[in-house]
Image (cartoon, rainbow, N blue to C red; front, side, top):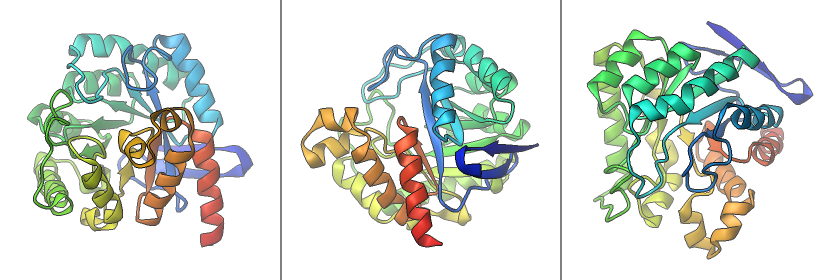
Length: 288
């Protein structure tokens, strides 16, 4: 299944559903939370009409993909019942697919039944914060030819920030990727369908996050692309001492995302698409 995405300025590229083929300058995944309680935008885009209006904005600003989430995974968040998660996400994905036939859509979920409903509604990618921990999720992704974002997380959203500990965070995340890629391939999921996310802020301290960004390229297992989800993350507030700035201004996210791109990031999951898209265009101009 081939899909072509066209953005302002004549920029275009193609993706096959069976593999990740990303543009040289970096791809942008726009965040579309349809939750009442996400850490920075909870309740703003709940419901099909509000979600679709925001998606139009993200696409118009140059998003290469829209990531739809129906469960908050902020630190301390309680798990949402899959039925409620499906109620929030499936109608939105159906509406997105109807309006944007060529748009690449991902479902941000840790529940196999939610992922199945989303793929049936028109999603192309499963973005799993548990890194395909469940056999059910692995079987589903083997059965349906979707892309997969395989993320590292220590613990669960309910407990992950209580006391994260590593002997060597970079080595341990890399080992996790090696092991989960092996499990995925044993389940019948080709490596070409997988993108890796080190899970910044998911069971990591400030020092852990910085170490992973510094050594990002060493996490590239089996040549797989790397996704960075840095948008409005708390560790940047710790660094600059201004929580409000990190939440309300795109500048910290853009700067840190560009630094991550210099270290190997291929895709960036963000709330504010336009400023990062513009920054990536400028960065790529210097590289050519």
